[in-house]
Length: 427
Image (cartoon, rainbow, N blue to C red):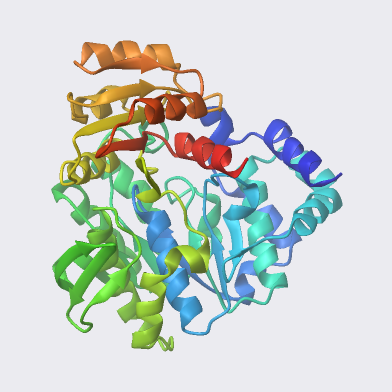
């Protein structure tokens, strides 16, 4: 098979949550342990850092990887989902896994994969772990896919675990309350392995504390150990921290303030464990995370004329930050291109959106996408107004056509809306 044929096989023959949702979700780690043994326990050949949470785990994973890379380590990075190309999920020092490796890995092991009836994420995780061993990485930053306790990545014993925050997302799999979701995500807390918790609320803090006590894991609550003492917005963020003056961060989303505090706490712990991370590595990692790791879609400014920004925030907690940040920008009118998937709290998101904006309702090119006309109907019932479009590209073109001087276009509501947008830009 060639690369495109392998992708077709992966997307069509192996259940993929990104495409079909719940039908691809598999509880349990049985297949993962079989694969791990078959590939000779590759994750034991390098150090790992495990990053979970509801929102912010991608930004935190990429930034920690960028800092370690800047410190001279050879760094693997495993994240999901991808935006444009499958290979974005698996990187070493920012460079995507090669097409040839993907093809050979599937071709050479296809009989085993089919005998186990693998999910897409089980297969992809095995590929990432084996690739990092073959590429002789020093350390791999591993982002949790879904939840934590039963996630395929949870076979590792990392040097450090990070849990960014807890929100009501994927409730059909993780539980319908914050404490239930926290319990699932706390499953990545390992015996005697330090853990950093980025944000908590009253329902979640005790869940993490009790789990850490149970397994004798040193626990740090980043919000109780603030590293950032002040900040102001320039291009991205400019932080004043307890140890660094004028720390520039390339990531400009409002949510990045709490992410940065989580990351700085994590870096301090890694340094205490013997990681050689100096001030320049921290500065370079924060300031050049997108270039170093290929991160996209986080409050990404796509153009100046018209002013156009996209962000992958896709649940109530993520959209709260986006709406808050949009309200701080100086523009005469907001054009909001939005699409969502059908397993999110659509009503909760629509309740947060500004009624003064003009909306362009659309859908991503995945099976889970909510029909654009249904989204428009729900939005109209919330007092929002606009028109529907059958593709992201069509919706963005319409917004550009209507956008005047000193007006802003925002594109989001779903990771997959941003994925379609960036794919159309690459065409």
